[in-house]
Amino acid sequence: MTDSPAWQLPLDPREQPILEKILVIRDRLSLLKQDKSTYIKSQDVTALYDEVIEQVHQLNNLRREKRDEQNRVDKVLDDCFQLISLFFMTIGRNNEAPAVYATTSTIKRLLDHLSESALHCSKDLEGISATVESTQQIIDRGKSTYSPQLLTLLEGRLEGCRTILSRLQKNLSGLAPELVSLHERMISILRSISAANTRQKFPQNEVKGFQEQLKEIQSSTVNGRFVGEDGEPLTGQEILVDLLDRCLKWSELVLERQGKVDEAFRPIYDRLRDIRNQLERLTLTQAWSLRETDLYGFQRELDKVDEARVNGNFVDESGHPADLFNQRTLLYLLRRDYAYIYSLIVSSEPVSEALLPVFNQLQTLRRCLVEVQKSGGVSSPRELYPYSMKLTSIDNMRVDGKFMVGSDIPEGQGSVIALLEDCFELIYELRLSAEGEQDGT
Image 1 (cartoon, rainbow, N blue to C red):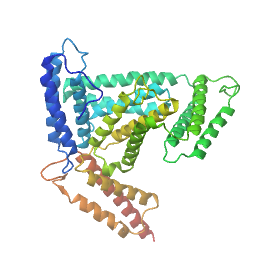
Image 2: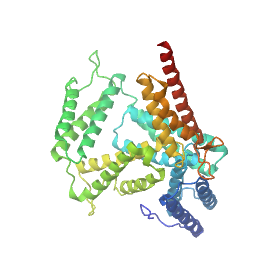
Image 3: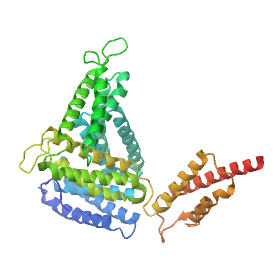
Image 4: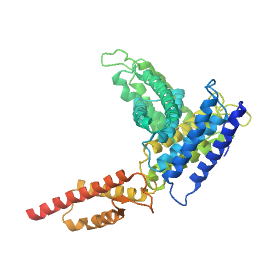
């Protein structure tokens, strides 16, 4: 495994043994990630976590007088914590402190990009803010269980996210209430144009349709300003005036270039689009096909692309920066990829991959039963037999009330059993309703 970007070796020779040990740990984590022959066991992950924390203790003791030191040791430690975080999700321990390291990393990337682009709406920030708060609660609950070094690290990362989030929220705080929904609509149109721009076949009519929507918004202004019912300019309208101008210019540029990226930037474009397509498929099949540790490879590949930019610009092999069209096209794909990773992380279920087959079956059964209930129920209790038989077969898999895999008790028992009981309750309600109707006739 290679590091990116290039980080200097430790200046203090006493850090070299630590570097060597965490490189070995990272390799073991990578091998564990690649082994798909069996499910990940909780004890394997916690043992590696303990080894990493021991090295962090030693590193902190060496750096008492140089807390700001950053070298390859820090980069490899970041890799280790990132992998361990995703492993904690894979084994269903999403609500424990080590699991949120990957969450804070992804939130930070997203916020940095939102800050850089200055293109965000209130809904973007509300969702991220809710995740930040739920992450803080997980950290707080871990104070009696996990290493203070880990918790301090997570607190610092989360505080950095809050600082950026607060600044972005302040940027939108001056918007008049009447302009909030219009602002969100314009952001949505801009993103839709960017998405259309990266299609396999350029949808010219679709982009023209978005452009017409922008022109309709422009025609609603008075002397180029957004005004209220009293004819006075609304507060924060300068944000929308600037956004509208950016949207119109972007739509014109996209229609002019027809989605054609310069050959010099084609390799980056193709790779980012391929990652986007893979992550998009994962969002559709997440419950059945995602092992959270698979996200590590995507994260690191995106980080390499992001960190290879020079002063925020993508550059070709000769060091020449991309023009506006190529720059914005590549940035859209990069940011969309990070957004997909964020979505997959926050929607990860707190259930071990060993129990996911059962959990997914129960989720599907529950959705079916809810749809049956919504459509008016069943005419006879006999129609519920297939559901009852399936649930009974799943319930019979339990040993002393627990779902076992060999001699192991995988994480997520509470979630699976609650879902099972919910399904039985739905069947009971549907049976009562059907029997009541039969008695009434």
